[in-house]
Amino acid sequence: MRRRGTALLAALFVMSISSMVVLAVLDSQTSQYSALSNTVAYDEARYLAEAGTAHALALLETDFSWRGTVPRTEFPRNSNRYYSALVEDGSNGTVTVTGTGESNDFIRTVSLVVKQGG
Image (cartoon, rainbow, N blue to C red; front, side, top):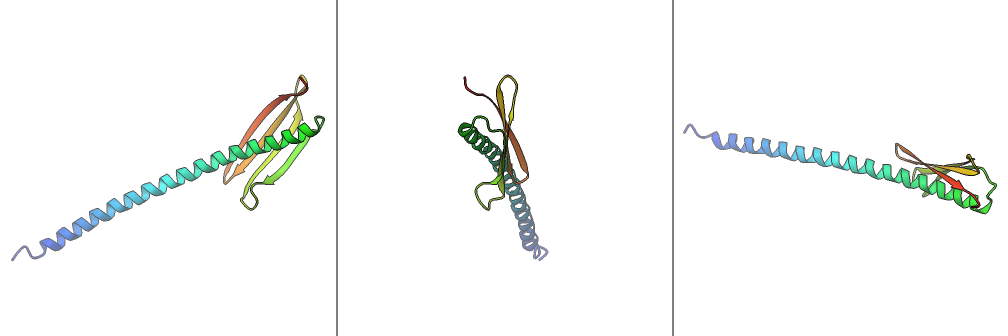
């Protein structure tokens, strides 16, 4: 008769171990999701910076004497992701195109040096 509470104690022990395992798995999955989300935003910022340089190059192709900025543009609309670009004269007849992309908390920059006309 001394073994009446043994089954209850064993069940509580198994439940507590199971709960700890479930919590550890959930914590691990949350960390992995955060890391993936940051990676996506980091890559998006680079692609947006490249979009800014492409936009500036298209304007430069239309008028090769143009120097200026591509204003901060949200792309796609209502996404809170932006690109912009700056076109400046460089050395030895080159043009420097600098594109900036913003996604979440990440800001990335891409710079190109373009030689015009040959």
